[in-house]
Image (cartoon, rainbow, N blue to C red):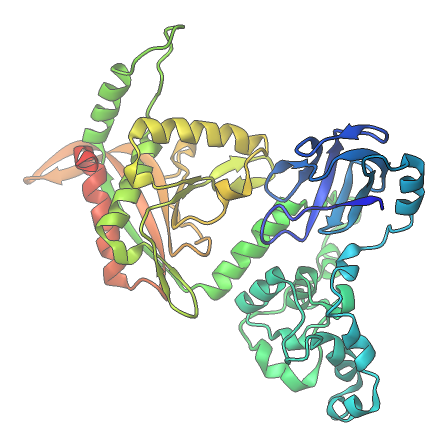
Length: 450
């Protein structure tokens, strides 16, 4: 029997990916563990390893193909001793989506729907709702058949899944259906559940309405890539579903700058006389935020409907700009790491992020985040929380400002930071404690080492 090579799910929320490059061609022998292809997701490019041994008999999805669904057959492999041509001809036909074949439990549901006894239950609602009901409740427990990402997006947008018409296999509701419902382009079943959508999401302008405002030929349409779509979806959902509040404080970083200069001057050198590390202000910020969360543990949390997640360690995501968007690689257990370790880890993350080489586990999760626009001369801004985080710290530039001390005006190196908090998890006074703890640490960096 030929072996089907499927489009892998490289992260828990991945539904589609781009097949960037084949590293093996038809006729090549493959061993278990060999890298056979590169897959692009919205955040990174990752290598796919072979699970079985054999010979690549036929490639069904050419490199460069975009939006290949998870579990689609992308190639067929002949097993050891199997005829390659026979495997190729046998595997060429299933250019079908194995996602459908892989769900035997769901298949009987659509067939059961037309049976006479099932009709009365679906009769009262309007025709469109009745037609879609059997597929939506395919598992027999009145549970909507939907992908994990679709469920999360619908929940964040306060849209009842039962109102969304699924376009996935067997009527499964997938992410694009939720986005279509949110944008007002369709996909919402009418009447019965109208109140579930609520007034929380104002209808947005359609593409046609926007294009009509501009003279034809005066613009160029640049299609969104996966990263930009993901950023738009996640941050829109965050603003709509997470009640933000903001706390701003000014920090005197004179001692920090002096300590940084002294640490960098004392850094050991390698064989080429280059320092083994170079600490930045942002490295101090990451460390201070991590220690502050340990000092105020009630802020080191994530909100869930079932209960509060209280994290034991401070896993700090750090926003890194890259072509077409941004990504937040995570410094795990940052409170336990030295400044030099944080600095070197961030340099590695930043380089691989821009090359789209980060692994999902390196940028998914985390307990908080830091966004620093100080290098662009921005003195103050607010950042949008990236769930499941309950906080994010926006860091402005350091600059000399006049301050009053003991009745006298002095010049000091000041830096403004703004903490965004999820009000479901953190109240105002608690947020003030956290940003106060950060200020004490950043103004007295020696306290981070204790």
